[in-house]
Image (cartoon, rainbow, N blue to C red; front, side, top):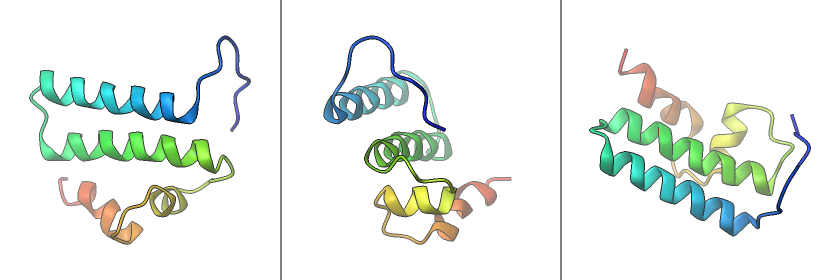
Length: 83
């Protein structure tokens, strides 16, 4: 789903930098475990992938586009193993 843009325009680099800084602040200030930190990283990398390829419609495609070296099934397993 593509939302209409309102307000100032930001470059992809600015958005990626803001997401990275937010992730760093959250992980530094909160006592997050590896599971939550990995999820924040997936969100940040996924958002960057969607900026580059807004036609991504599945989680597996998002994981591949986000540049992970591991296959999507392995990445998904990071959370299913924590149950």
